[in-house]
Image (tube, rainbow, N blue to C red; front, side, top):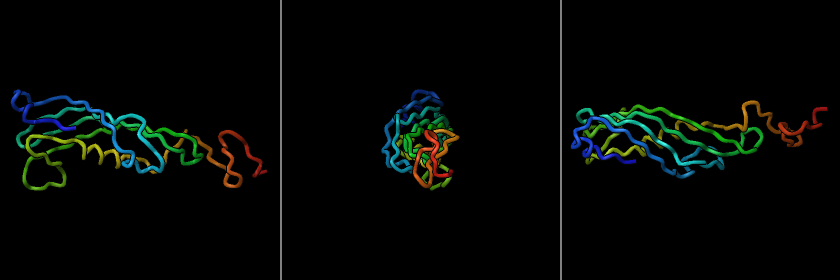
Length: 148
């Protein structure tokens, strides 16, 4: 997910669009036994501004794992918007990402956005009834007799 800003400057343009699809390691997911269903999609615009580059756009990903209530398969889909500044300044700025040699690498920012957007739990459906705490029956499928 590297964009060559030097080429953009030499072309005389101040802005360019980009689209990347990249497979990330499932270890990035904070949910147990979950995996990415599709490559992570990153779409946006890069705009030049002196010693800074402005990146804005969307990150889209899908994760499959076990429902936190009933343990059946569940899918979590997320679209994250971003609006970030990259600087080639020698001085560190915690509000900006850095870039060097005219190359802006979006990978670190994308990984951070994914980790911060990851839920603590996913559900097969909003009204999942979960499992009976006594017999373990999936209450979405059957009505257990433990409560009778």
